[in-house]
Length: 354
Ligand code: ASP
Image (tube, rainbow, N blue to C red):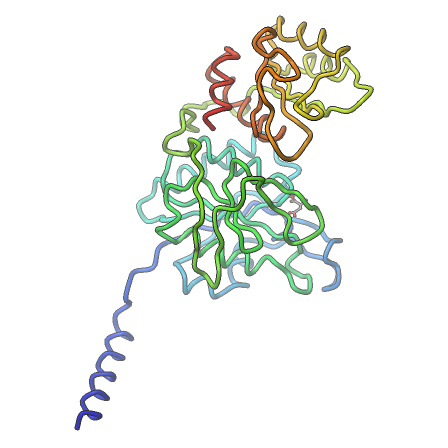
């Protein structure tokens, strides 16, 4: 009798579960830009020799039908290029497209498929200029879609899981690679041949396992809705020109002067050690600074941070210390900073806050 009741209860619950979903799925838009995740090689053993940006967004999504169990997923093809070819023009266009999408009430999260080379720059840029709490997740792969053990499908599945998760709201733009969730501001590509290519010196924010995010830390830095930058207030199709000069021994002043001639409004000095500057380069940088070119000291060393007024008297020279932002991230923040101010002290404040 009891067994019979339990059985019919189970049957009724089963029917109920079949006819009514327990929760409505979120809507996620996959914005495709190209990269290796959309790459194709001649054979399955070509894991490193291939052409990036070949596979269209619908094929990428259809290759992982399981994403539709996590969310209602649709695709938009924003670009189809290798990320090393992205310029400020594409960056601004992409930010505008993403900004339009997050404003739609029927969009709950965004996944951006992107080449890994400059993923950190795009992620940081969006982290600074798109005002939203909705999850924006960048994802790529190290092996092309045609390779044996391609890493793109699981990365995409995890990215959709993240973009559709309430837990990812308000955490800043995220990078989802190799099971790890990273903050846009401090993630960097650190290996160019293995699938564990991304790392942050401050650690991952969390991890996604079997389509579920687990969180372990948060970034204390300003991002998205709390950012003073906003893509809506940038009307131009270009950003103020900022160039990077890589530090080594035997430096040439001409490298900096050429950037000034090209119209650079700031130069990121990717210095040795603590963003150090050779004594014979200091006069060139001071001349440029006095002519209105901002000098930002970053470091070619991938970990640690540039300490202001150590090695060089930044206060005296009116230079900026990039703090823990690597040269390529410093370029992004400086370009945005220059849309608002020419004051080195203000730019320094921004480096501490973002
Ligand atoms: N060069 C490629 C790109 O950044 C590399 C990759 O996606 O892994 O588009």
